[in-house]
Amino acid sequence: MPIGGRGTVIVSPPTFDKSGFARVDAALAAAHAPLSRAWIMARYAEGLQIRMLKPPQSGLVLFQPGTLAWRPIGGIGRALVVHDLRVAPGPHARDGVARLWSVVEAFARYYGFGAVVGLIGTGPGLIAPDHAPGRGWIALDTGPGGLRLVGRVLHGPLVLPYLPTDWAGRAAALGHGIVIQTTGESPALEDRAERMVADLASAGARARHDRLADADRVRAQAVRPAAVYSVVVDGQLAGGPELTADAILKRARAWSTGQ
Image (cartoon, rainbow, N blue to C red; front, side, top):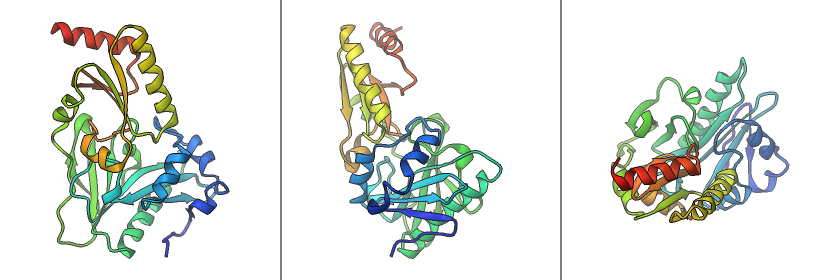
């Protein structure tokens, strides 16, 4: 049976449109929000779970079994991965954050998962540092830009989840030219990728949009842990959605001339 929790509601496919999820998702600030309804519906078939805080609090959490997680984390076959967690600011925000992490942990314990993990950092596709879990959680690994993979081991023995170390090789595998890699979960970032490719092509640059179509590709090919939106220039990671077309072109010219 689905596991809810005190002060939270379960958002399932039959209740999705009546739950207010879209409104809450749009209202809670995040570079990757709001999420794609079509993407979410497809993920339900892969074990996606969504919980929301009951009013007057406003918050949400999305989590998935590690074998189907849309984040490049290794050793998560027995883990539950928190894909996204956001809570509206306010005097009770920390209580809401703790409640959502607790709900995920209760679900993991009930269904026999060995651990719960999440990616903490700034930028699209990451859980904000002020929404990190509290005591009892440990840093399992670190990644680019000070990102932390945090986890709570529920029972073992198990291989501790970890981040890949082949980021440079993943970027190099995309080959020559400008590649904007996305996951399809954020309509705003998908639109940005399409516009950016068009603008770059108009400027005479070789550019393409590489959308990772399934969880296996994300885990094997994403060029950085956040995965949602990455810009790669001639096989080197350049950045994310903060880069304008002009900035990308300048980066490409500088790297091509060795400057």
